[in-house]
Image 1 (tube, rainbow, N blue to C red):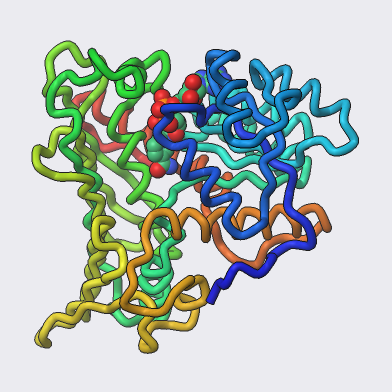
Image 2: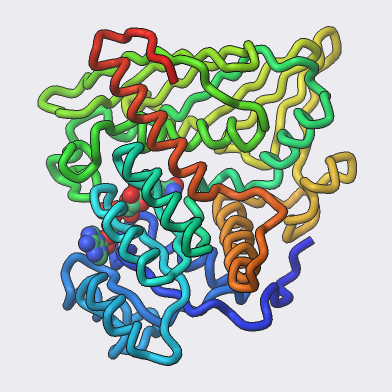
Length: 385
Ligand code: NAD
């Protein structure tokens, strides 16, 4: 159980790039990083608009002298200080991640990067090499992977509760972009523009989330080949708002993904169902505290977060007893706590002996998007992974 005691001797000096006023994802980064005293927000380049960014930084308690107009000034000015930042979170639109992440690693900082890490496998490999050479940690915020019921699912697979894994059915299919709302909303506009979003919309924006859940839950989840079909249903969209992917895994299992932004009536719709030879489990992000466990021939069960019958690993990061819901913010806090411990260990020359969405997970997401787009754009052909 996590109860707010300090995890590290002192908090890591931390900055944010992006995540300013009105951004979708900035607050959850701050809320999660600051929750367990693992990080201290001391600087930032919070906004594409420098004045607005400074005003915002001051409003959340950052020293005005450390609210910088852009990330280059942030790294240059902080390098001159004795108490300079040690880690940075990159929460800007997709097209900026590669250059900012590279600059941060070159400046010797640990990084938390939003997905996608970058757009190309070669860029991802370069970042992996750079992080390894410098002994730095890169965490990627596949947020719900930090939820305890994802750990329970992982432990059930490891303990063989489902038998041999045959099928993995994934989806992240919401309905929020069923009309051209990008015309009025700048935060959605960039998601439909390849210049800012990259080669894909929903495959990268939502599909990579359940993909990482599968990778976290199933230790031998390795794709052999895949086939993808993508389509923009709303007129004038350059990028897809719906995609289907079929994957053969090296283990012999098969997996499917439905990524969509036009699933009318669905709020979020991120689900993963794993089917083994004995039983299935299913998790849905709109009810994250429950994990369906269905053994063939027996009445279906629903496992509840915090219950004593769960595996101990799934209870370790509870913050309150069973029956009270824990959700996205708690899952993110668990991840940021793991990032902090991994960064602290790296500073001491040690490696973390626990899993978290790291730079390899980020690179996998980049490769998967690339392969899906390659398949879809050649008429939904099978592509070797
Ligand atoms: P947004 O458009 O709502 O906000 C982007 C913020 O970054 C704004 O404050 C903007 O002013 C600032 N910004 C843009 N360019 C900048 C630059 N060069 N330097 C400094 N600040 C800059 O976007 P969002 O929805 O918050 O998404 C940001 C990133 O987070 C995207 O990569 C997106 O894919 C990712 N995201 C992840 C999750 C998740 O669950 N992990 C959820 C939503 C978004």
